[in-house]
Length: 108
Length: 100
Image 1 (tube, each protein chain N blue to C red):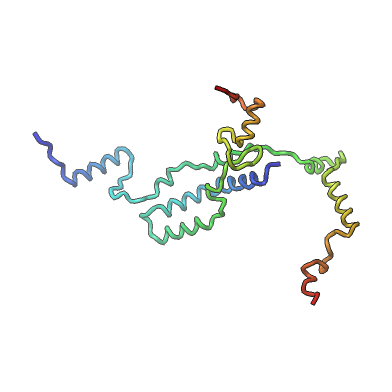
Image 2 (cartoon, rainbow over the protein chains, first blue to last red; image 1 turned 45 degrees about the vertical axis):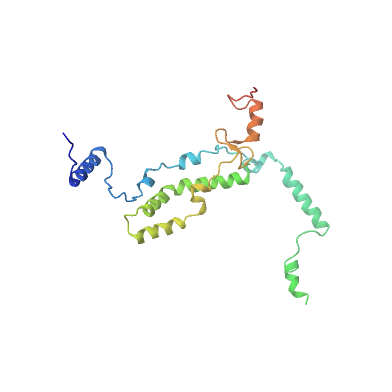
């Protein structure tokens, strides 16, 4: 006994039926429907969880919350001292209109 | 304070997470060849209009300690040298130096 080749119409019917049974999309021409993008998992939550969410408290926040402690920011203090020292030596920022750029055109 | 590069990467991660759903919807539209060409082109333009941090490739795993972007061990989120230092200190559970 030889097996008969089933007709083309029967084959399409069969594949349609199998798609319906197994929950697949019937797409005989293999058209790109973009479904693979809908199938992708969202990476947002995992990507956001990479760095530990540690809030570090700065000295500035402490002084803002409790000004009665009278804490001194040593870095800021030395910075201001240096600034005033530079100003005394005449190394401060030039006044408006006295800078290099604005005097470039006036020299002529 | 975290390093500036880490802050930049955090920002990128937040942008990716917030715009991911809409972006994927536009990506679906562009990839679907069954849709009219005009719709797909418009979706492509919309995708281009997102900030550059919205792309998942803008994210780069960095060392938690130093912010180094290369040689970062994914499992420990540390760069190779920080990993070595911490492992030798015994701060990473289950990791110890071996010789053979």
